[in-house]
Length: 115
Image (cartoon, rainbow, N blue to C red; front, side, top):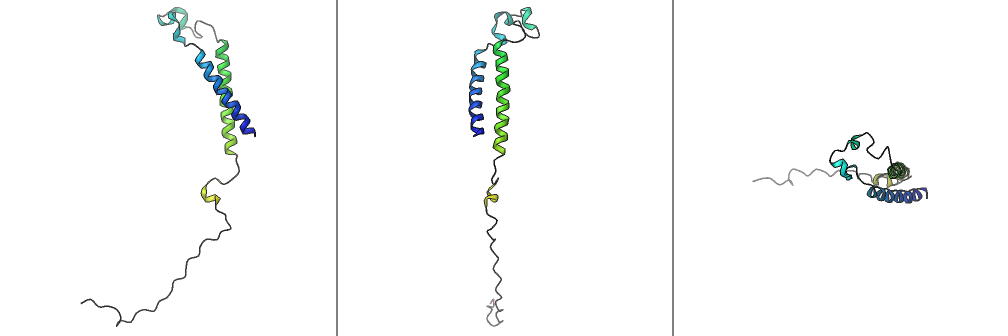
């Protein structure tokens, strides 16, 4: 149940993250940045430290990683056999080897001779 809830949030977060990334403009989208304006080379760019879209993208990316890790953890916690060999019940006894049958040796007169 918990895994399904986290999975729904994971899908919604990923869709929101895709939309936010597609809405944002790249740093090279400004005409002034393409021709080397002075403000484009600063540490935070010409717009300041971060806009609302940038901060929201960072929050959604963090939530995406958290839900990814939690889904991986929950998937690993399932109880049950981990391989096909573990599925075989231990109550089944292995097949016993048949005992070799001691056949009497053939007398030398019955052994075919090479001519």
